[in-house]
Length: 133
Image (cartoon, rainbow, N blue to C red; front, side, top):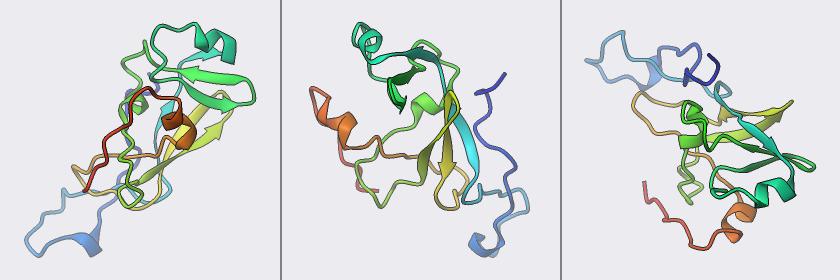
């Protein structure tokens, strides 16, 4: 089922390996689609009626996507570090879904971060926490 996998075709990273690392170490290359942000479709008026709007994302025009009730959609767990130095993914609009694309090479065990944007944070009743990294 789509959304169950979090990365596609990892590759071995020779230039970032320590001398005693083994061949099982993989990285996710820059430009890789790691997952998709998708879910229930809403218009702005219907999204305003949702009890929980935390996961609603503007897709295009009057179309919003809400993966909130779909806990298997991995992209809903990507955090905004509120620190541009830590952002390693971006959202790229596709037809009826949003791809999460790496903006640099991702090392094994590294958390995925993407910016939610100023519009998201201005609409929140509380501000997020800034990660120092």
